[in-house]
Length: 115
Image: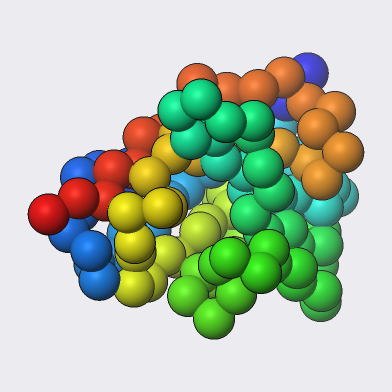
């Protein structure tokens, strides 16, 4: 079973940047499309971005398109989310998983955008 560990969350000011990482415990990760999701307080978890196993296709939600970039390094079993021009509405716990959420959820990483 693949285990996922998210990291990189922090408190940042509006307009700031962060890079999140999601490390997988097994190389099986390398054949999986992966995605980032987020859950804000009082809201349901929502899709943010996804990437195919070979990085040939990327998808973004409309709310982050042009500001966030998903990437992966299969040699390190890691997927990244570069977040630029962060806004208060980006405040959430961020998680990674496959696009169909077939893996156990990790603990997530908290991103707080506030002045």
